[in-house]
Length: 337
Image (cartoon, rainbow, N blue to C red):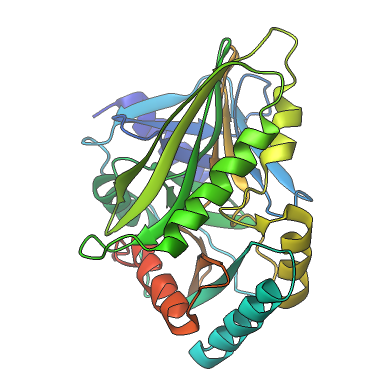
């Protein structure tokens, strides 16, 4: 066991300090940042509506292998604010309204989400995090604890944007099905919508390359994924590209403004950090941003699991509900006492 990591984590919990645990996709190391307000290594949470950004930075992060990660500390959680989640009938009615809006407008896609609220049966966040690490090796798996403010747990499969020196990468991830099902025109259209949106916004890059779409596993699901890479000149504005890409059609819709406005007017709740993005910045020219999907917010007596799906003119309200129920299992099935 890495004693530096263990002591650092124990001290953060005991002293009520903000910290974040994360493991990058297809890697073994679990990193720990404890807030020290330095400008070195930073992990950020950016909200869906871009109004809120929070950062935990650490000049001397610790890390441990995911196999060694065995902890069970008790965290101080907030009491849950009053909230009444949509029932199945209400959600399906909203999906139907969304379908009709798309059919009678120039909008191609709108992503509608909801909260699945369950009782917090004294779940261990650290044991649940360990389960997520094992269940989702290809995801960014994180646990964010900001005492007195928010506690989030998630395993997101979607890269928004990464930079390594003069190389940038992103993916178009859209379309969801169970392994035994076949892809339909709806999922293929969803994938094309997201890919076209990204390519439209990649102006000023060099040596643009695409690979896919491919079928990729994500827990119990499969997604369609297209890999996109390019080279950038030294004066390239990465922050500007990030603003153009977020929120992508995979979490918002297209056209972006019309879909975004519809979501704010009709979804009935504040997404907060769900469908926003998570960022990992290091002192070198290395930056990685992931869409905050498959995530949940934890309170003393409740867990709020955020789930959603892309709605097009061909969507079926009942199937959309069923898809969100299945997606809630990413976090829900990993919870343990």
